[in-house]
Amino acid sequence: MVGAGDVLAAGYDAPQPLPSPVKELLATLRSRSGIRIASTELPDGTHVVAQPVYPQATAAHLVVVGRAQRFDSGDRAILAVGAALLGLVGRAGSDSAELGAAATALLLGSPGADALTGVVGSDQARLVAGVAHRKGPDALARRPDWLRARLDTPLVQVLPGPRFYAIAHELGDLDGLLEHGWLAVASTPHLAADLPAAVAETELLLARARALSRPLAASADPLGFDELIPPAAAGAFAERLLAPLRELDRAHGRELVPTLRTWLAHHGSWDRTAAELGVHRNSVRHRIGQVERALDVRLADPETRMRLWFALRWG
Image (cartoon, one colour):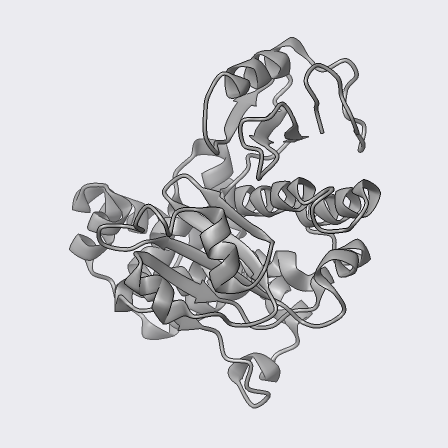
């Protein structure tokens, strides 16, 4: 984490001092107002993303993360939740070391993120995500304090789009959020250490919610489908199946995974998918053709669609 001019905390071989392109990125970020996020690529190929520590979005404190792979939307969502955790320092009765460790665990997606328990608690919690619906949230509903009160949790982050992420113990009034312009979904309950894995789950739920125009909450029914397959096996299957698409997205920025997710959610509708993604229907056709070639599959096959939807749930 970076302060007004100094690195306040660093780890995982972060360079000291920060490279010039990173300093320029941080200066640009500080010159803006509101909640925002910025990224750059260093000459050695390292991808860097930075975001202010919420709730003081105009303050000097910034979270800076760098790695060899590009950051996708799920990674940025985790970064946003981590920034929200850091922003609770001095406000939630937890010390900075505990919250810093919890945020780092979220950012890295560590399966042993026991530090999160100190913030979230030992009970299971849900990852709640919301996006603008139709005209979008009204002025009051855009405020993080309003969302914190509605969801009964201090762990809320509002992002451009607009969209929000929250970690909550209770399901919350998703229908009430819809009345104020938020289309929201909630993951299945997870232990604190497993919450980073819920990002992919909420992205798939959001795709379904947009297609249905209504809020969705994943079922926690012990007889549900998820209970039939070990999470580790499901995750390995998803990683193997989606790897070619993710590689193309990272290397060339092709947006194949989000396009596939949206297209499947809209039952293969070119027009509805194009409208949601904000691209031409021919772009959707081209991307879906790339998916078929990369995976060597035919998406006309319902069995293939089912397998890919399952992979998107766990990937």
